Amino acid sequence: MKILVPVKRVVDYNVKVRVKSDGTGVDLDNVKMSMNPFDEIAVEEAVRLKEKGAATEVIAVSCGNTQCQETLRTALAIGADRAILVETNAELQPLAVAKLLKALVDREQPSLVILGKQAIDDDCNQTGQMLAALADMPQATFASEVQIAEHSAKVTREIDGGVETVVVRLPAVITTDLRLNEPRYVTLPNIMKAKKKKLEMITPEVLGVDVTPRIKTLKITEPKRRAAGVKIPDVCTLVTKLKNEAKVII
Ligand code: AMP
Image 1 (tube, protein in one colour):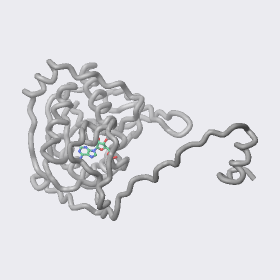
Image 2 (spheres, rainbow, N blue to C red; image 1 turned 90 degrees about the horizontal axis):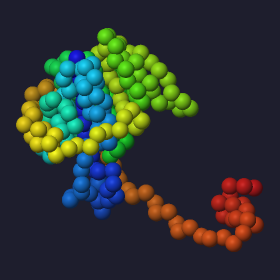
Image 3 (cartoon, rainbow, N blue to C red; image 1 turned 180 degrees about the vertical axis):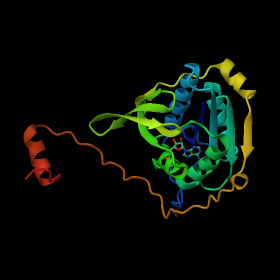
């Protein structure tokens, strides 16, 4: 059983993002980039399935610029067997990524595609669902537990107010939630081994996919700064302020 794991290169979660002064986007100059945290969980899950004998090959794939090779090397160091970079400098929106992944699904015929539930840069939470629709595969999103049987996967999903367990037939699309696993630390020997693993480079044109953006971003702005807090001497003042200033009680 092959598992395809799409990994996105995003601004590291510890970085405080800065909006460009002209409002056209986020400043990426000299900013630390990393693998999207939900994708690290996806790679970890795929590698664990391989270690348990439930999978035979884990293929990491990233769509984006040439620097995404670094992200793919990290996936290889976690334990993926080989990697594919769909190289492009074009802005990639979820529908374009889903189409590229669909083309790779047709080529690689994986039994499982494990994606992150969302990328922390655009917070779209769309790619896995769109891929499932395009490839006509069942989907189990927000997974917190995955058990593989011969022709199906039993997935526990995080939903509002609890968890839900579904069974999907394979091939299927699964997206990861935070509690699925805790990704391992990448060790130096594994980083060295990863350098020798195969990383194939292709382009959207080779896959026959038009990645032209469908959505135009008009403007990006910083969130409003929070006003400084104030200390109040007693409960009476608090109630007066809640009535007169915050207007949350009448
Ligand atoms: P999104 O729909 O943008 O929130 O992304 C959801 C998931 O789709 C991510 O966690 C990745 O697994 C995958 N994904 C999105 N964009 C890319 C990309 N450029 N390359 C590879 N995988 C991606």
